Length: 347
Image (cartoon, rainbow, N blue to C red; front, top):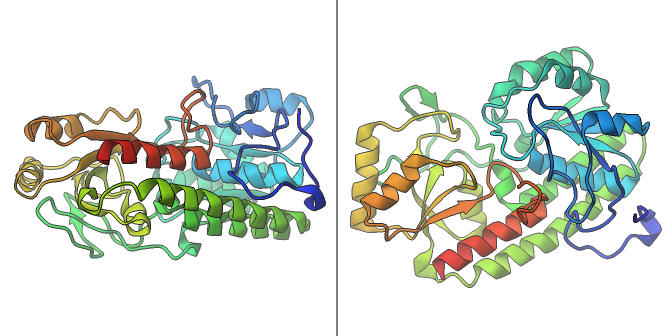
């Protein structure tokens, strides 16, 4: 096992989650009927379940809601020699995930709960409110990293405006999917570190947040370098839902349309919207249909078939990090793998 380096001996910035592996380092909160693996740092032997972590006497100083934030939080607490937890696991949809009563209780017991915010965790908002009422200190990250307004695409032409809705599914306000821009996740790391320092009174967390942000700057540069191989005329995407606004702005892509209206995965397009999207793709073209890895969105496959199979379906890790063995076990690895997957499909 590797010992966590002190601030004076930390290695130079690199990809978050590639080092400082000391087992158990993260505690995954127990999920009913779901064995959680793969949310530990890449290269570590494993983080263990909540019960296993509790047995070694360690208690998390903070808990994150989503796997992406959990990966960054883990990098910060590992740097500081402490433990963190993540509520969701690989494969959980952040839009509709609901925590167990035990998870709610554990959120109330930790010093800090790191949430995405801007409506992303809609399925657990009541639970988060209850945890706050029970004494949990919550910080919502998305609203603090210069959020973008939702970009709405009606299937015929691109556009960006607020307050639009499809069949009652509102798009009003800012887009919560900021983690698809690695640079913004670096801002989030500094914010989380500063919040932990304030809550615990230990300034080392702020230093570790800054260090993690530096590491993410290197990841952002790597992602950009990989995506530079994609020709300028091969950068038009149609996505399964409106989750790639930040990615498109940060890395130079155009989102020509979305299959499922809105920033969530729980809406359904009308037959007219689908027909319009097929017509648009046939007339104007698209370079790839992007969907979440393992999501199994049948509409995306149907659209590809409608266009004669000429538009490739590309699966990316958008909704969360990947399970063990996926190559996307940390946030950093997931974003680099996304870049490589998209570049291979579009070169």
